[in-house]
Amino acid sequence: MSAQTPSIPIRQVNMAGLTKNDYRGAVSTLCQGCGHNSIASQIISACYDLDIIPEDLVKFSGIGCSSKSPTYFLNRSFGFNGLHGRMPSIATGALFGDYTLRGIGVSGDGDTASIGMGQFKHVIRRNLSLVYIIENNGVYGLTKGQFSATAEQGLTLKGQGTNPYMPVDIAWEALVGNATFVARSFAGDPKQVKELIKAALSHNGIAVLDIISPCVTFNNQDTAVHSYAWGKEHEVALHELSFVPPADEIMVDYDEGQATEVTMHDGSKVVLKKLERDYDPTDRASAMRLLEEANAKQWLLTGLIYVVPCCQPSMYEVYNLPKTPLNRLTPDRLRPPQEMLDKVNSWMF
Ligand SMILES: Cc1ncc(C[n+]2csc(CCOP(=O)(O)OP(=O)(O)O)c2C)c(N)n1
Ligand code: SF4
Ligand SMILES: [Mg+2]
Image (cartoon, rainbow, N blue to C red; front, side, top):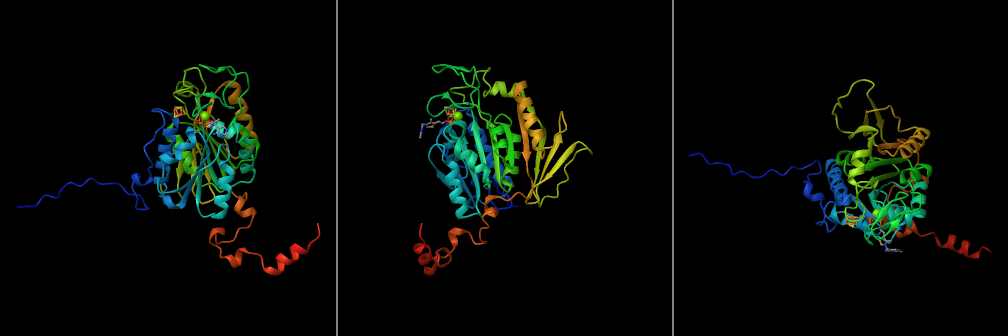
């Protein structure tokens, strides 16, 4: 009699020996259908696909529904939920302390473009190696739907009246501020979100991802520019984007002249398959013109808008950090010698 092998469900492991479950977080307490949940799922998938060891990554956030979302991915990673608008300075300190960690910061349009605008601008000009995701819904979801700085002029919301002000364009602000990676996406386009997160994780410097992430409770009427319906109707994708890790020998299938390859700092490639137009994301002037055009024509322009793939020093290189991360240096290497302290103390000011 032949013994039958019991059928054991196969749990697929990646090259790090981990299953997708190893990248999950707590069960979300956000509203069902909130765009932020969909982005958290894509962060999980991107990190699983890239074989990242969760303990080699640190998550940061400020305050808001969006800033709660790091709880819902990568349970095993380090994390710091900071103060409203102050995520960038916490990320700067932590990553400066250990530059070997990868950093993902999750913020909201209120957290970044309202209270946190100053911090946003400065972390960009310092080119900290950080994936900076803005989950952009045009409102302060957590505090019951007030207009944020990215709300469009003329938006009328129940209990809020009509927004009289012009909106802040986060991708534009990043570009003007000399960000070395700027992308925009839409929570309703999960494949693109995932590929952009992978590319951002391979970038040596600040990677700003402005992701339109509808708030289904306070700002999801069909005519609102941060709604699912408007996004689906008005999305203009710049290209079809695929991320190819360095070790991957996959031949990406496309016709000659139909795609552009961008080689990243770590040797990975971002393959941009042409859709409607030829677009070179390494040309900053074109990126600025394109954003102007998109805003004038009311397109939700998505894709990799701008990237400096190589050779712009990140904050770590600017400071010429030692090979051993600062948090692992012994006190004798960290403390100035007594003679130096005496000399400094004797200086006259
Ligand atoms: C210093 C300070 N001011 C105001 C608040 C109140 N507050 C909490 S979250 C928030 C806005 C969050 O909006 P956003 O970043 O867009 O996140 P969302 O909830 O929309 O995802 C505000 C104003 C606060 N917590 N701290
Ligand atoms: S209030 Fe809006 S932003 Fe907050 S969880 Fe609900 S849908 Fe998401
Ligand atoms: Mg918001």
